[in-house]
Image (cartoon, rainbow, N blue to C red):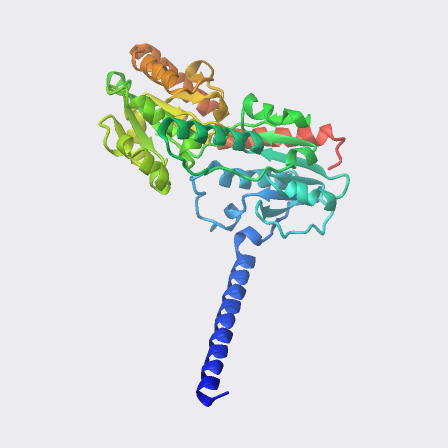
Length: 407
């Protein structure tokens, strides 16, 4: 081999070696960061006095890393809720190991009395737990098989109406948690429970712990009866925003205020750009903090909120809006019972949604004010952190008694 060729060959080897070294270093750093991330850590909390037993808890771990003087983020109720669920066990005398629900590396080395999970760890860890361990699945969604099928149906219907295919945003791999658990808890209604009925396991209902409390609002009903709030997180087709947009385009006298992370779903924005940004009675606000003055002003300007989801576990956004005195207009699959202070839609066709919006906009001030008052009152009596803490404690004691006090 000539010297020139040898140098070229050596340079190539050096380049390959350096490239592999850089990749190896990057992978080591990423693995190190992963191992130290909250999602891969274990937090242990100890009770005062005599220990009653040990609990393994698999849900949201972020709340356990907040500074002592920091408030809980209000982006979702499950952060505070997870913290309170653990606090309940500690108050009852249990030592609790907390892991994040995405921690698929944790291997139990203790003899746990109770195990609580929300997704895939129930199936994975059941064979490694003591036979007497009480296993409780917390159901924060409808069953994932139903959940996926419902979103696929919505996407197919949209494709047939609009001639465009949008991405699935809420698909998940199904889990067998309910089939390995002894029982379950949920913040949803009978719709949610029914999607798990095949497993024939006891399911205990819980209230949602909404992050805000608001005074009963005073509204200008003649003005706000024509204004409706859309308040949701992502997965806009799953939530039914496409249906609402198509309904409101034919109702120019009624206004839709949209508080949702719209810009995160570019394909949806592209498909509905005209409705979102070029239709005078539709107002795309974007994501709004529920503790902000902006949220309160928007809520006070609207008579009702709309939530047309195809599958939920008991949508917290609906319950939050009830605290703001908004009349809930919701799909049955939203997982929230609205009794006599709202409207439940078993038909979310565009024509039916349009008819319901028209019906509400033509109600008398007295009817609207009375429904708003009852929605607000129900939320204040049920959907609070204090009520969740009380109800969860009672449910855990019932579960422990039901399984012979094994724990």
